[in-house]
Length: 259
Image (cartoon, rainbow, N blue to C red; front, side):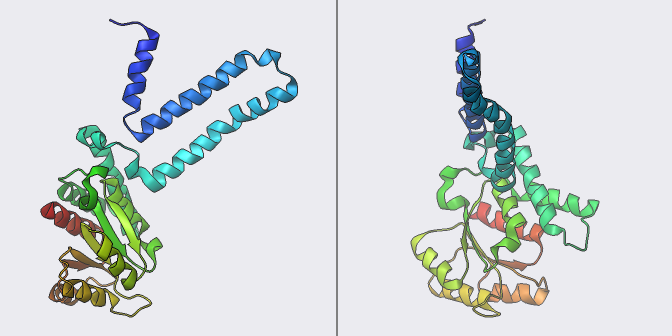
């Protein structure tokens, strides 16, 4: 058994450096280590020289907590390394993050998500996530979302990001078509009515198919009627819904099938 503290710390640091969260932890240890070293010689400092150190020790944890809270709420899917997806415990946590985001997306201001709804969300995540994505997957885990009001879909995107997908946002049909000339995507999600027109989702879909691009295309709009689902298929789309759970499952199934 090796009791050398230096060797033990080296092994711990090596393990932590494998993902962003570990790197953050190492940075915190380094900063506090330096602060502790300076504190050891604080007796030789004047009161004015000690003041910045005191303020740092007081404010640093608060700033760190705020920064970490922002990272978890906005970029939870990017805090783990690709290798973490191979660990079942980590993967379960990623699934639960997706569940939480879908639950938030499903809850309207005047309604509550029931226990049955939560179970449907959990089932949707379990069924739709047989693959585990990483930054090395390139276009295979990259989705374009076209909507002139992207803030309306924050929770939906977080659900996808929690299982390793990444997004490029486009605010108009022209912007989306220009991006498609230069990049490949695993899927495209579009709203229906935009400033360009009330049926702009179909306009964009028709143009993409006219150009020979067969990227899976999904309409995420206000309607979930059978008529609009059939119309989306007629235009060459892969699905149409207003339900975040259904959208999640459709898109993930299409991506897994395509890859």
